[in-house]
Image (cartoon, rainbow, N blue to C red; front, side):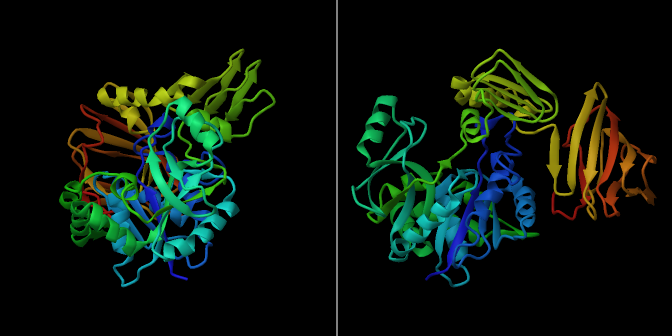
Length: 469
C-alpha cells in the first residue's frame, strides 16, 4: 500500500460560533466537545491508520503557534507546518500540500481533512478511508459524502451514481431550498458534501494542471520561494497573493472525469452554528445543553454557555445564550445563522471583539485585559516555564509589573534582576525591557500600563526568539 499522508486544513475563521470563536482563535482550536480541540480530535481519529506518518498542516500564519502547541500537546510535530500569508481557499492550499508531499521524491496518497468538523463514529470513518484507498491508489479522486439525516439547506450536495461503495460523481449541487432538499433526501442518491478528500498527490496536481494551470504555477512559485521560520514554512506572500482563489470543488472535482464519492454515515457535523453545537451536546431532561455555571428553571431546548459568570434561565425556550469575558450573545435558536451578521457589523466598525478575545494567546503564554480606562490599562500576564517575551520598548507607555506567582527575570535597560511573588518593578517609557520565566511553574503577574496610547502596535522589538518583527 502507498504511504498515506494526512493533510490538515486549518485556515478557517469560524465566525458562526462567535463570540466563542474569533478570527484570532477560531473554532478548530476550541474544546467544544470533550477535552481536546476540534483540530486535535481530527488528528487523533486518523493518526493510527496504516502507513500514516506526521501530518502536513496548512494554516493561517496568525495561528502558527496555536497549531504547533496543540499538536505538541498530543506528542506530535507536523512534518511541515505551511503558513498561508493570505487565504486562497482550498484548491491552492491542497496544491501546496501536494507539492510539499512530493518534494522528497515520494508520491503519497493524501487524506485531506478540514480540522473543524466532528465525527461521532470514528471507527466507521476509518473503515471508509480504508475502503476508498484502492480507488485512490488506482488514480481516482475520492470525496466522502455524508448520508443525509434531514433535508438540510445549509450544505452543498453531491449526486452519485446508484451503485454500491465508491461510485462515480454525477454532479455537485449548491445549497438547495427546502423543497429541493426534501427531494434530494427522498431520492437516496444525494449526499452532503463533507469537504474531505483522498487521492494521490501527483493525480491532484495533474488535474489542477489541466483545469487551473495559472493556480498551480503560482503555488509552485509560492512554495519555491518559501522561507523557513523556526518550525514553520512561510509561503512567499507575493506569489501566493497572486494565486487565483477557488475551492477544490470548483477548480477540480466538478471538472474531472475521475471524481468518485463514498457515502458514509459516521455522525459527521461541521459544527456550523450554535444550534448544531447544542444538538451535539449532552442535554438535561428539558432538552437544555449547558456548559459552565448555569441554572435553568422552567426552560426548554436552550443552550447556555458560560466561561465565568453564572447564567440563569427562567421560563425561556429555544434560546442560545453564550457569555464570554467581553461579549454576550442572546439569540433565538432559529436565528443563530445570523450571528455572522454581528461579526460583519463589528468588522465594519473595526471593533476588536470580531478578532480578539479579552484573553489573548501568544507563543510565550497569554495576557488578559482585566480593566481599561483613559490613560491606563490593567492586564494579567501568564508566561510559560522557560519562555520569554521579546526585548522591546514602547514610545507611549510605561509599565508596572507585580509578580503574583513564580519567578521572573527582568531586563530593564542595563539592569537584570529577579522578582518573586509579591515583588514589583517599574518599566519607564522608552526603556528596553524583557520578561522571562526562569522557574518551573507558570509565571503570573499583574501589569499596569499608563500613557497616552496603549495599543498593541506600540511595540518595537529588538530581539525575539519567536521570529516576530
